[in-house]
Image 1 (cartoon, one colour):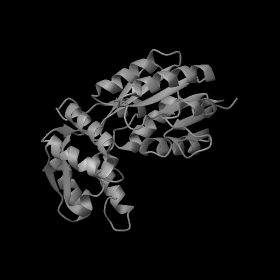
Image 2: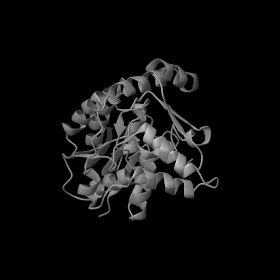
Image 3: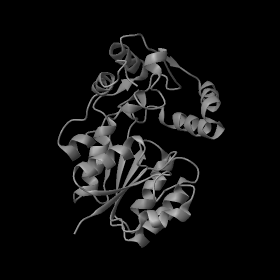
Length: 274
């Protein structure tokens, strides 16, 4: 009997990759997002029941972040509806060092649906397809991160871990904390970006107030407040140490940031990360 998978957040960095990997393995996958049919919108729980109908295993990414106000309420409701729908396994994407995310992890882990948590460090792909992807073209990488170190995770590694947890036995109740193999400062990241892009990229440390104002001008006050508070929380060195989570699950080392950036540059017509 076939197993039906669903991916919440199927248009995002991790969800897209998880769905693609599952489909490549021959699994039936229901991609769920606001624009899919059935749709899934975290702000409209009345649509969750049809989205979960007939699903056996579920990958969950919460937008904007598990540390956001109200995330715990939404995750509690999802756990209840997933149980009622007969979902047999959940894999939750979580963030390292976030107290709010930990509360959401605990909610799902205590639910009736066997849950695996994939707790990730900062995404390497934030520099190629995310909020910092213009650093190579502007020559400026600006964040309120000081000289903190971060072991950036390749999202393809993360997706591979998630798919392993979704498709293989023995992961229920576990937390897979996944990072890259090396811990880098953002100044070191800028140096790697410079080498890969062939033009100078400089890291500019920002104050939290300056960062808030810059984000608010582009994304609005709510997003700026959330991101600023997250930066205050996690840019204190708590996440500096790499883990062996990728190697333990996949049996191979995690990829380095330089490899991710180099591959992204090679795949971009302009020859730079984008």
